[in-house]
Length: 276
Ligand SMILES: [Fe+2]
Ligand SMILES: [Fe+2]
Image 1 (cartoon, rainbow, N blue to C red):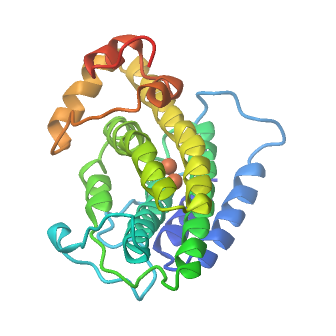
Image 2: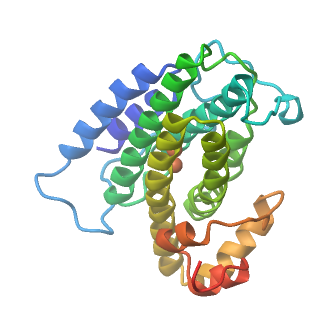
């Protein structure tokens, strides 16, 4: 069953339009459901010979998107309409990139248990829903995804962690998506001040779902640490120090990180107190 699942995940990853990704992910879900009439026990991997896995420099993005160096992506406050368009455009790009990251987590690590693949398909589908909501908001404001330049920093982290699902789980969900939890309340505040209640509502849905994504990353990171007899917290710190540019830059959303599975020791080391 590996070839079908991997092939579909690969196709979905390379597809440039949301609607293509949605259709292929639906097929992927049907393929996973057909694996067995009853849920497989945790720990059981997929069967069959895996396809050879290639590194991907350019995953699928809509054609109209322009990529530039990170320092050339314009930044503005959320007060004016133009400022909100910048903010929603940046979030749209994060969500579209997150779709690709979740699909790549399926494609690249076929040795992982079937529940892992089901988890990342669910994440990919939630990212698609996030992207669709944000794109709709952008269109309501008279803009669209692709109207502004973007950078590929998120995908760069995927490439760096291609070789090992332990590094991938640590750096993508448990680090980058956890950063998303940290910055969400500040963005909600800016939108509330600008009177954009719909924007606030969307960000609240995203925050709730993202706690789940970080939580699945936490679960699979700890699962791999257990398998390799590694201490999870020390291993996480080492990996983040190794791969991230500004590793421990706050402020942190302590309560959301706690809900997602960060331990009290880790939270304390980030400066969170017990009540936050
Ligand atoms: Fe998301
Ligand atoms: Fe996410």
